[in-house]
Amino acid sequence: MRIRDVLHITDRRQRQAARGMQAFLVLMLLAGLLLRSGGVVVNALIGLVVTFLPGILERDAGIPMDAGLTLWISAAVFLHAVGTLTIPVIGKPYANVWWWDHLTHALSASLVAAVGYATTRAVDIHSDSVSFPPRFHFVFILLFVLAFGVFWEVIEFGIGLAASHTGTKGVLTQYGLEDSMLDLVFDTVGAILVAIFGSRQLGEVIDALTARLEERRVG
Image (cartoon, rainbow, N blue to C red):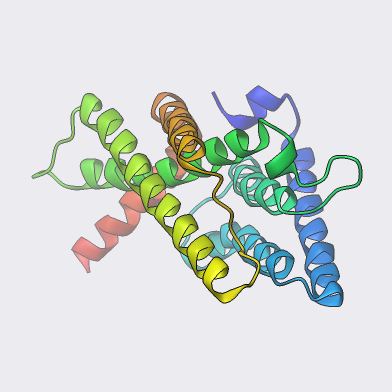
């Protein structure tokens, strides 16, 4: 099942949605600069850089990035950036919308899982000396994502600790041990979705990575 099948929108609409998110991040960056808000600037800038990665990977590395993949990546960083804003009536989505943090963690974890899945699958296809059973892929993706999730929680804790000691406002916020455990649960949800549906959505990416590995072996 591909992303366009789930969303029931055309590739053109998906690309337009991704461009719209990109434009919003540009406005968010400018607003952060005008208001001298370090948190807004950093989150908008990182998100904006990430939205350009699909185009760079396709142009410079020959990795096909269809509209669904582009929207997937853009949505993950866009929702994270918006979650740090203070919105009228709502306030900060991360703090006041109970499902926001869960959604962004699941999306971000799915991207991490996609990288791990595509890489191991390409190595599996490319190398005659390496053979990964289907169960290994599933377990590897889960462990890979959970390891990254724990690493991310440590980063959040470290940034929060540094901010409290320096009296500055942290770029990332950690809301306690219970929140961290829930984050890891939804990281797992994102990993499971990729483990189940990754072969269909990432097929062209895996083929391209395999071809690059073949070129290096021949070269």
